[in-house]
Image 1 (spheres, rainbow, N blue to C red):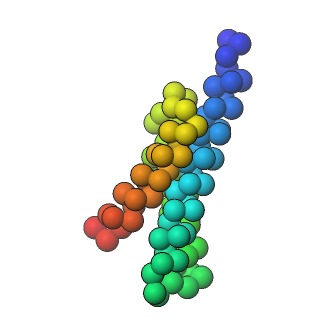
Image 2: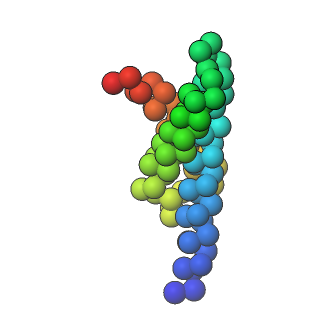
Length: 85
């Protein structure tokens, strides 16, 4: 029972890192498009945050923080490649 606070902290940190990295990646992807405006940039960042959270939610208690960042970047790439399906 003594490891419970550490696991909760790890889960929270992994969620924040994954969501943040996915949001940042999609912000820069949208910034490179020629038709970007505030509305689409906000959409991309919001969807990036959600994609990062979805990507890391299954293993947030067992992965390292660096792996959460990689998971967020991969989640952003998957979202960007499949958004028109």
